[in-house]
Length: 91
Image 1 (spheres, rainbow, N blue to C red):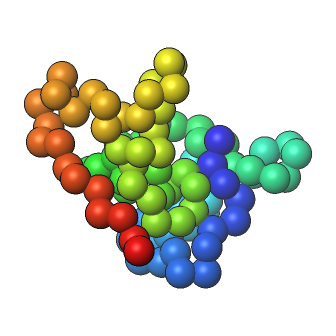
Image 2 (cartoon, one colour):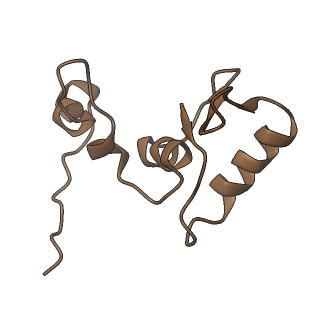
């Protein structure tokens, strides 16, 4: 399921990709008309690019994507061979 709406600040390549997939009918409006459904698998260069595409806003895919147990992708960095990142908190 792909969010129907996107944030006003959401722009650039990922929005262009969404629009191109809508035009090519790879991203179709659901019968309920409140979300899009992908008709073909898509590959992304990062977890964040994929999550941003899905939710229609900038996001950190390592904290948005969850496994079946509800754990964020970030908790699997070691097994994926990825360096752990320290999240900066806004004051």
